[in-house]
Length: 260
Image 1 (spheres, rainbow, N blue to C red):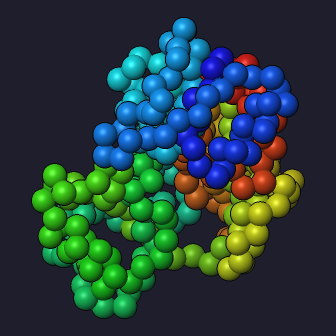
Image 2 (tube, rainbow, N blue to C red):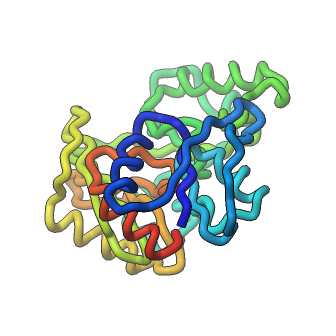
């Protein structure tokens, strides 16, 4: 398989793993707002191409007919089999950005906010209703044509949940239904990257993958420990997720063998 890599810091770690495995790859820049790659990739077999970089690469991969290209995901909040395990999944509110000013108050009530679609438009974070309204009003003040590709838009669907105290957070990479690597990325309020995971958290993530075997050939799943036990935080596109301290040799070998 040929790997097409966008030039960014995390990709250098991936390139080192590909070098160790003797896998072919090339470097590219993404033309802002357009999405084309520079230089244009040299491709001999469109069915053996995988791209890693920004989430917007899926559009380029789709337009070129590359396979597996980028492994797009269904929004995890729509996966009923996972609902009992979601962090605050039962209490989630869903609101389109254009409706935020009419449904949220100008107050200090806090919500955990993230777009429903796995688009990287806004990272998951806690904001007050006042801050969410301010964010929405700035975007709504722009015409749709003025909004950069990959940014929040008027019709972006947001998920709001009650903030919960999280003790630990891990990211795990699922390929072919199996967790192939993992990384701790937060401990309490501190960002901590270590290649480690609690045994029960690893088993929990593997169980989540087994509950939903047809979700995607490859994806990232974030799980966390709370006072109420282990929960599923979210899933992410494996082609655009940060690597933290994952074992990238194992990850690259698994993706290359599967074809993503």
